[in-house]
Image (cartoon, rainbow, N blue to C red; front, top):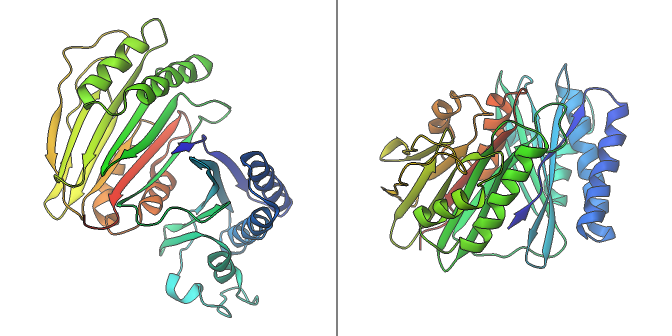
Length: 335
């Protein structure tokens, strides 16, 4: 799965509704979605942006990114706010409104989306996650994921990058954080992505050695690689530096071990650790662009779809002074 960095659409006044709609449709056109999908996205974006203004005093933001899975292309939107929250079950019904309108917004969004999930917490805010594809997405996947990379305020490029690849019931994921931010951090992270593509079928410790070699002479990075074997109920992990990884399940919460060092510069002997995985487990990986308090919030979110967990953690815990990335993986069904 190839995913672009998320672009942030600010929605704090009515003039920004049309701008958000145009930018989403432009991204859909660039991603190769047809006119019908673009029309759906136009309506969905208008409803999401309008809801942000109706239900929050300060508005909110829409994260948008393009998805590519072989010949299937899509657009992902995540509307986030810190408003008063709502009763989701009531609000997705047509005719239900808290502002005196026709009450068709969330219902229309759900009908026009290929994937739609909503989470709200009274007094804390709401996240609405949407995906629209150019053709029916693959069904029967044994895992689901959600993730966002958002550049630091004022930057157009992010030094954070993540990837998820899958083969024969094994899911490989990588998250890297190029040192600093801006162009040089972005270039280091791009080198890491290329190395991951070339070695992604190998054990995590081997992949991390490959990342270390690929980043020599660059700005350098911290990062981690996880290999999730769904059939064997095992998660293998190798990390270097301050990338945070947490597994939550009925067995409790486990912080995964990451060694001190910097990819491309100073790395001790890499060590790979194995952890128990269950069908109810949830893996969260994030850069230091999210507060360390994000790990405390994961336990209460473990039953949510992976994209909602990622969106909520970003909404609640992302910093504006650094690139921020969060990646969430969970099992969709038992093997």
